[in-house]
Amino acid sequence: MIPDLNKCFILFVVWSFLSTILLSDEPVRSSWKSFDSSHFPFSKWPSKEKPNPNAVLIGVHGFSGAASDFNNLGAHLSNQGVSLYAYELRGQGNDPEESSVGDIASVDHWYKDLNSFIKKVHKETPEVPIFLYGESLGSLIVMHGFPYLDDSIREKIKGVIYASPLIALPGELPPVKNFIVRIAMFLFPKMKISIRSLASNQNTKVTSDTDHWEQMAKTPHFVPKYTLRTLGSIEALVYSSKEAGPKISKPTLILYPGKDVFTRPDQVDEFFGILKFKDKTKHLFKESHHLLAFDKEKNELFNIVEKWVKDRS
Image (tube, rainbow, N blue to C red; front, side, top):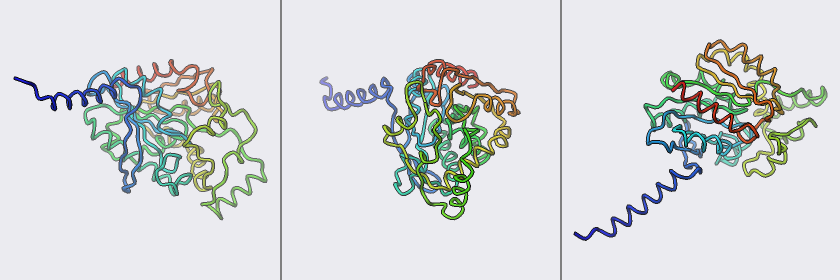
């Protein structure tokens, strides 16, 4: 019997396509619909070990960041039987709605987006344990957004990871500048200002080899200006993190750098000390800066995350 050459060709094309996805470290990119029918891009690093992963990690990126910030971690975990999903935050540089970039009307939108995305991932992998990984601002969204998740969703989450958690700020503005900004926040909440104009002249390295502003200038998702209400909302999340963190009764892993441009190690240690859940772990990367997954101790970080997740799956 002569084989159907058309069918053979189609099977070959399909297999070639699947092989490219499974063997590549590049993520699968798609979009999803949130609670208000807004569509946002997301990236997925599927487990290469077997069709169903041992666990799923949901990444929430940081301020002026993107899902691509999880490229290194996602590539590592996908080779270890763990899938990683990361979505683009509303109001950040990869928000498809250009008018929304640099603004968030309410932090509740971030929480509802998180809830919607977890539900979407859970629908894909209904029997797989889920872990949340928040980086920098993402750690605040996970922390403060956790109580807003559906009860059924909270039950599926087996642990939370905070990487370079933004639970303190490096310092206050000079009194006059601070007063002007506070008045402007009240009178002109939608006014956008340059982040760099508010920054001090302190060290701004985010890895051993890169400066924050130099790195941001190279990234297509960099947001140069934010509305005052967005900056005020983030500040409020930072200062209320000590109230929010202890309320989460889930295994918690904190990964923090010794040379962070934002939060000092002793401030993270203090935050860790007030967490009430017994299963809590912290790891200091003494030689690293804010972007842990891209700095010199990244391989150690990947191995710690992998083991911690697998031990709780």
